[in-house]
Image (tube, rainbow, N blue to C red; front, side):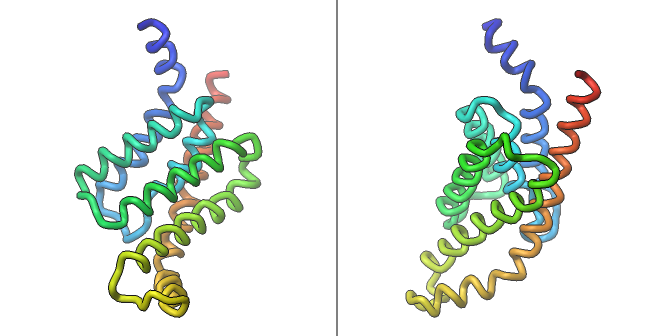
Length: 170
């Protein structure tokens, strides 16, 4: 029990920050302007243990989706977030304030490609051919700008909050 308490105490900031960001999905916000991709990127960066990083992301998504409601694209959304989380956990030593812009773009692109593939695949709106897929991606571009902006904003917010607290309490 003491081992668990010490473990949670050590990662309190990271766990609190991730949950706060995800719960921000529940408050009114512009469409696709959420911290969730930043959560996937930064939980990979903040946690030393991949399973904890993954678990925090899953629990956070499930709790917020309980309030928001489950949706037909959930598989594609979760897969994209898990892939982002895994990639950024593996390259976390490369994450710094200089690279974070590029990594936010990469994370947003991964989410865009996988989630909109899901829209095309599950929707009857688009023809099930290459032209339908291209049209689906084309029509999703306005949503991508908000996704990218929010990912950059929230990733830097978490990065600098974490940096400031580490510096202050070092």
